[in-house]
Length: 81
Image (tube, rainbow, N blue to C red; front, side):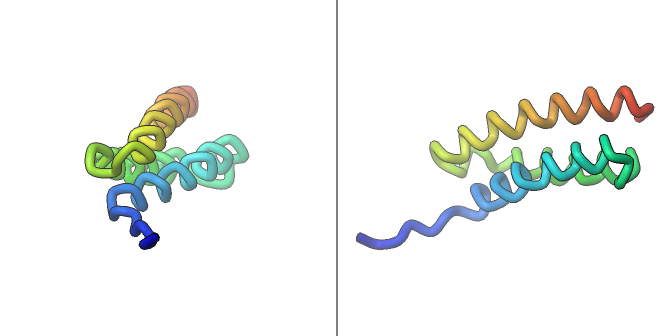
């Protein structure tokens, strides 16, 4: 059976999904600024643009990423951005 190579869109979603908890933790701990967190969240939003090209796994990842971005958005609002 041939190996299936993940699409670029799926790889972006995976990277964003891995980055999001780091952004939230850094913001909560004060290790990153609100501006840096907001800029990093932009990458996550950009990764969602290709979610429709990432197949079923991408759909699941995108759903989780959207939920995380909603949480992060609330955190950013509370921090004054």
